[in-house]
Length: 240
Image (cartoon, rainbow, N blue to C red; front, side, top):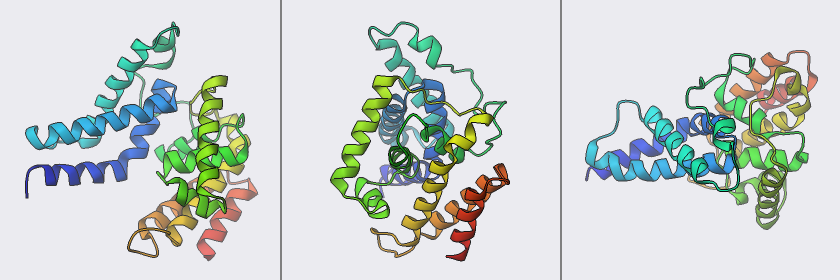
């Protein structure tokens, strides 16, 4: 096996297990989902180029995060006609977890971030499933009982609205969480559904995906124990 084999395998595993956390960090600091996604993708390409020659770093997640942040900063610096964007949206000294947020889980923070109330409910859910879970339009269409073309168009329209309205990507304040709860619960339930009955791959059930959905459901219920929807979603998932 060439050196590229182990390096590529390590990269794939890092992206699978840590990709959502890396993206969550970039979204919060860059203030733009598109910039964050592009930066993470470019960092992954650089890893494929550099790791086989230089070796896999001691902390692959930290390497990808730092590299993606630098890429995002360069992009924001080059943006024309948007003065102050770099200073307002990018803070390389910001901690990974906002000190005033009660949402302590990285993945759940990203779900709440994607579920912005300025977007329609179906747009919030579709965007979160694509961003957080990395589901393809075909997978999202299957779980939402829609078509792949309709999902692709919805994603395009949603991203365009976010850019046009300059909807910020940031972890919501504690008092804003209930307004996003319906979409968050829908995302958690949908992620469990697609893991429980996978439409692709060589396994009918994605056990790791199911466990992650149960974990998110538990955390959401613990975060807002007096809200009935998280309790109902957790109960339904556990019953299934």
